[in-house]
Amino acid sequence: MPHLAALLPSPSHGYPSSFCANYSAWESKAERLTREADEDSKREEDKSNRALGLGGVPQGPPVANAEAQLKDLDNHSEERKKFIGWSKDREVNFTHKAQDAAIELSDLAVDGKAVRLIGSEDVTYTLSEKANLVKLMLDKCSRVRLSLDGSITTSTMEVYKCSDLELELQQPLGTIQVDECTESVRLRFAERDHVGCIYHQNSPGLAISWTNELHQIGDARAVQHCTKLGLEIEGAPPLVTAPVRRGEGEYPVDFTVEAGGFADKPEPEAAPASEERRQQAETFRMKGNEMFRANDFMQAALQYSQALELDPSVATVWANRAQCWLKVGDHEKALADAIHCTEVDASNAKGWFRKGMSLHAMKRFPEAVPALLEAEKLDPANKQIQDAIRMAQLMARNHANGS
Image 1 (cartoon, helix red, strand yellow):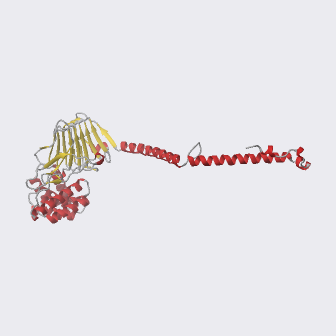
Image 2 (tube, one colour):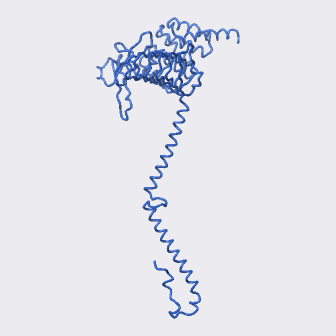
């Protein structure tokens, strides 16, 4: 753009002298107008750049979005760092070597933590009922015994590359993962219904039990398998094992156990009405077991109730629902179900035990003792029953002495 001063007339062009006298003022005005024009042009250029996302000025929509995404990624990275830190704060590792006395995990500040026992050898661990872990992992442990009385929030345990491992599980677990355990790993459940999903791979030494009989379920194949309880009906196997199927994202696809196999097996022939009701009741019972292992006791009680409506002749279901009521603090309902259990099957130790525990919770200690003694007759090796008897006897004596 030509300078505005060059367009103004000179004094020799015959303009009045008054104009010539104010020339300097007009020159200043011209320079000001020039600056304003330049600034207008710069603003127009900046405006175009902003629209196109160019230059070092605020960016147009494409670049602005990219920058916003980068900022989000930075925020996610910070959140991820915080999460990793949070996770590390909640996972604790322990290693112990050859000790005669049992190690009580509750004394190691494990409450609310994910606990990893790594490389421990020749050790016995115990976890009291008062403890509450998030998760339990055993990694490369040898000749280790573990008695688990406390609860695990996620109902999950992992075992990796362990040998000569003995786990006594007094509480139900929804999922146990056992991988690369080529030597003996024995899972001893307190009750049959405590057995959840056991995933295992290349673990030929894996065996489980809920009585004195051990069931060998592991094999040496490098393929992941899942073992679950079979239906508790005549002719059905006690345990069913099948390769794990993977769905989208490589997550395991859950199995529904049928009489004799998993749900992907051929449909059985139609059963008579009474038998069909019994099988439906068994399905509800197993769903109840799953809910119980997940610590959802009200949902478990609902499933057991549906099972009992279809078939009230199964003592185990009465005992299981009694345990749900105990867990949620409804002791009167627990007592009623426990009594039903012993009426249906007087040889059911769980029924007598839960009757005793219900009476104990209601502070009817003298009545609790004979029920617990009856449970001990039927299951003399059960340590929980023995401990409960001692406690009930002590409380009965204190109650009688007025203390």
